[in-house]
Length: 294
Image (cartoon, rainbow, N blue to C red; front, top):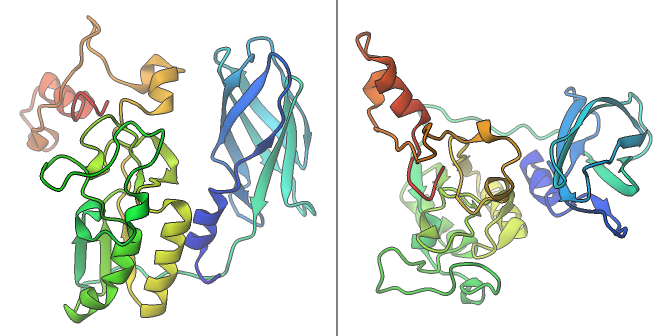
């Protein structure tokens, strides 16, 4: 595999392995893996599940536990340092009686090229580009189902296969890089087509083709010499994000003192205006992008 980005995408399929014990369960561990022979050897993971209230995080093999905490019955975290010259490709530890296997994936030596003033960037909203695989238009269990081409705010079915099928057209236009709007899961009840209400930061939306779909598209683009500009969003997430529902720490999301939503003023100039009031700055910096995007 040429690109470390591809390794990352495949790694998201390798979620930490856990087993079920009565009264205690682990639903997920984020991030789902780390890397072997990586300069940054200190990792902090977030664990969600059930039955954590009186649990300890212990019995590390392949790593040294540094700090840890039980936030609630459903949320815990631990920071550990990976031991040098580790022969195994995984870290193992326990939360209470639960065993967790945490994979360390091999990194490639590939170094992607950055953008320059010689690049022409083609911007894509993936749901609106081309429907290359109608079979993924409707995913059972997701909040917004199906497509409707007559509704401007409904999903229209564009996906990663469709982008792959259009790479020749993009090249003929003279583009050297493709900026794709957010591809991560947006499991929202409505208006999920734009991609900015992320509900899982480790899974590509299955209606686009999932993690495997992005890995396949990345490989196609590399073979053509096209660059991929990833659109990442860390200022807000979707109101159906699992952490929004668990809310392990109230400081993770801004609220007004009376519990109402503080909407953004969208006055970007307040950050550079030497005469801007603190209220103007706070309304821009701490305000929600929209009610569905805390």
